[in-house]
Amino acid sequence: MNAFYALYLFRHPVQADLDSTFATVNEAIYNYMQGPSEFTIIGTFKHWDVTAFLPRITVPTLLTVGEFDEVGPELVKTFAGRIPGARYEQLAGAAHITTWDARDRMIMVVRDFLRSADSSITRSGP
Image (cartoon, rainbow, N blue to C red):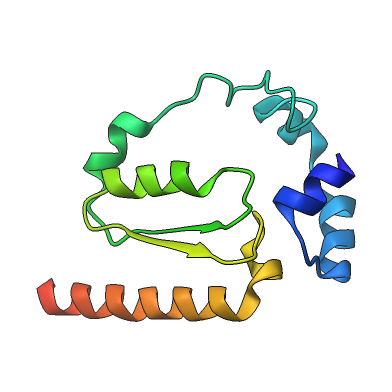
């Protein structure tokens, strides 16, 4: 699992955050939803699929993905294409936890998105 995590979950972990994450993870909930690992999906997520609902999303939406993300950039890009007006950002060199692997870029992307979302809501609001 550690080799998988180092490639697809986080490439540049913040050690204090990593330690805290592993120390506080609720394994009972993770196992219930996912299963015992990333490779054995037997939990409630196994058959969970909400892709049919994506076109119904009507709020500003940002989907981010790391270049080496375990989810896969092409899948996330497909989801973004199904959400009207969604913004898609792939973060170069990052795995799943983009805030560790591409911190500055992720902050910039989120700030830019929030500013644009705020201005679009302000313009179209009452």
